[in-house]
Amino acid sequence: MRTSTKPKFLTILTSLITAITITLSLAATVSVQGVITQASAAQSHMTIPCATSPICTEVQNPEEVFGEGNYVGHDEPSNLFYSNRPGSGSQMIYTLKLPTDPKPGPGNVPKPGQSFNFQLHPAFWFGMAMCDTQSYPEQVSTCTPNSDSNIFEGQDAQHPMSKHPGTAFTEMQFYPPGWVSWPAGNSCDAKKWCAALNIDSLSEDPVAGTTQNPTCQATAGLEYVNFAFITKNGQSQAPASPVNSTLATFTPDPNKDLFMNSGDTLVVSLHDTAHGLRIDIFDLTSHQFGP
Image 1 (cartoon, rainbow, N blue to C red):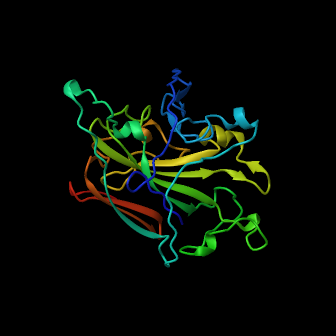
Image 2: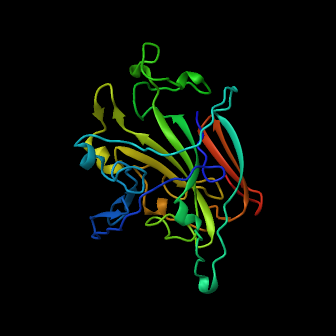
Image 3: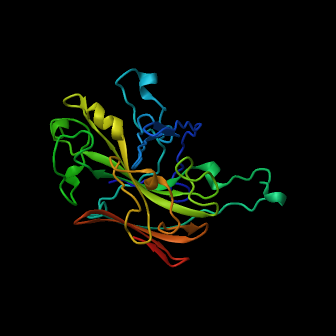
């Protein structure tokens, strides 16, 4: 397992922000900063297809750069550490202090040299590789719990790709306040922080040379994201699955979601359970809890 850290604790994510294009009709396709919506009278489906979305850290459309059928994933800076202590990959606890913004000058205008968090990074996160049998390279249907056997060092006789466990990347993201609100932007509030769990998977089989069918790609994308804001009761405010996610999935709800103040001290726990990965956020300053 690996953990990525950004400002002070986590390395800064660099992301492209592009114009918003919206086409509205009863059964239209709506593109909001690369977030694709299939609108209908009853319910709107929305997901983040990273292969074509500019909010993911890569070229906006790999096929335009590298040719049709070619997809190039993320290339991001990170601070990593590795541990040989048994169990360290499935039980982690971090303590951090949310960054603060500078106090602006008269008229709420930034002073020369001042930068606010939303100008420096759209998010920082704790990252970790995890087993996902439906993600690249899609060769085995199970992952061994709490075992280093899931770690493959390259492709050789001992670690052939045909036996490689599927791998997804988990990002426990924190979003700074003050910018345009989700889903067009990535702030939840003018003054408060929020957080969301993202799990990125890639639907590609390099051995057979196949990807998921066009119908599924049109619904969720080639690299799809399971997304859910951290709530105060531990229940997702809307479907997190990219197949069932809606506009509500990406719209912050102050009545349900955990909002935090700049400068708050947090304890973040990532640990494995019989039902899968669990993440808890304890705000030691406000005494709030996001299971």
